[in-house]
Length: 251
Length: 266
Image (tube, rainbow over all chains, first blue to last red; front, side, top):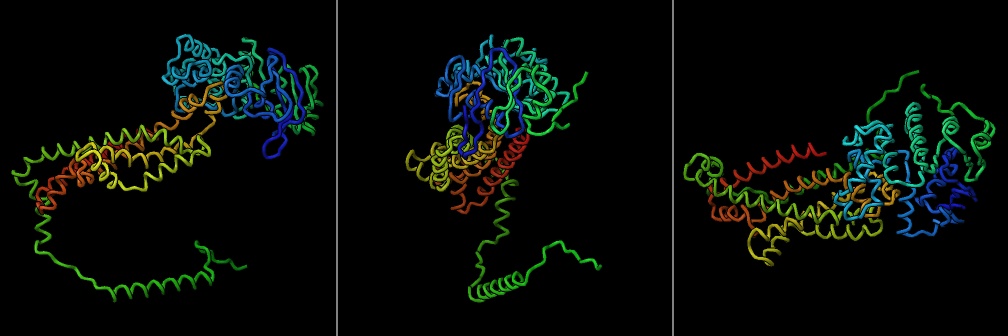
C-alpha cells in the first residue's frame, strides 16, 4: 500500500503488513516518517493512493459514504489532542462515540437508550473517572481528558482502536498511566490496538509487536522479543539518544 | 564609544518629511478655501431653544396632565419591544442555517452562496424593508416584525459564520472518525462550541432591534415610532419628551440587562 499526498509528498511507500486480531501494535519512527499517515489510512481519514487495505477480507479503500461510516464505527480512534468538545459534559462526550450506532433523528434530540448510557458510564468507570461524568470536559486535566476519549472510543464498541500519539501532550507519569489504561482495556475486550509512539522505552513497555517506519518505508516489523537497541538505531537512522526515551515511570 | 540616542519612534526619512509637510500644506489650503468661499450662517427660529428643551424634558415629568399619559406610551414601548423580540427570534432561527452555508470551513466552495445572500440582505437598509413590508402586509406591527427579522438575518448570519469559521474542527474529526454522519458531526461537534456566542450575538442584536423598531414606527410598522413622529410633526414637544423619556429608560434597561446576560454566557 502506498500513499501520495496531493502536494506530491509521498507519505507511505509500499507498506505491506498484516496485523492480527487482538494484537497491541506500536508504530515507531521519527516525526514525518509516516506513522500518522499509516494509522489514519486504516479508518480512511486519509486515503492511500495505491494498493489495498483489507479489513476482515474487505478492501476498505473502495468504501463509499455508507460503508465508510460502518467501517469507522468498527475502527475507533484516540487523538493526540483528545478532540473532546470542551463545553460539553464528560458523559455527553463519551456518548458522542455512540453516534455511529444511533439513529440520526434520535441522536439530534439526545435520546440515547438506557443501555447505551449504562455502557458509557461503565466505560468511564473502567478508566476511573466516573465521578466526573457531569463535569464539563474543559475542567479536566490532560490525562483525564485522554481517559475520556478512551472511554468514548470504548463506548463505540469497535473491533480496532487506533491511537495517534495518544500521550504526546502529557507529562511522563501521566503518559504511563494512560498507556496502562489503554493496554488494560484493549486486552480486556480483546481489541486490536495500533498506537503511534515516538518514545522507545514506552513502545518497549506496552507493545506486543513493533512496526518501525522511516521516510514512509517499513524498516522493522516484529514481536517485542526480537527488538534490540540496534533495531531502533535502524528505525531512527542514527544512534539512540536520551531524548528518545521518556522515562518517568512512577513506582 | 559614544552612545547613540534612541528614540521611541522610527527615524523619519527625508522623503517621509516632505510628504508630511506637503499633505499639511494641501489640507490647509483646502480648509482656507472651504471656510472663506462657503456661506456659513446659523439661522434662528422664533421658538427659543431653551423653551423647547424645557417643554421636552421638564414639563412631562412635572405636569400631572402629562404624567398620567406615561402608561399609554409604555404600552406602545412594550409593543416596540415585542416587535424587536419576535423579529430577533425569527432572525436567529433563520440565520443559523444560512451561517453554516456561509462558513468557509463547513461548506467549502458553496460558502459563496451563503455569503452572497447575507451581503444582499445587508445592502438594503431596514427602513426600505419596513416600507416594502408595510406596502405588502399593511400598516401595523406585523410589517415591523418582518422588516426587523430580515434585516437582522444579514448581520447575525455574518457574525455566526465568523464564529463557525473560528472553531476547532478536531471534534468534528473525532465524530466523523467514530462513524457519525455530517449532521451528527455538526450537532455534536460544532453547535456546543458556537451556541454561547450565538446567543450572545442574538441578545446584542435584540438591543439594536429595540432601537431600530422605534424608528420603524415612523413608516407605519407599529410600535412607539408612530406617535413619536406624529408629535414631532405637530411640534407637540411635551408628547415628544414623554415618548423619548420612555424610550431612553427602556433602551437603557435592556442594554443593562443584555450586558449582564452576555457576560454570563461567554
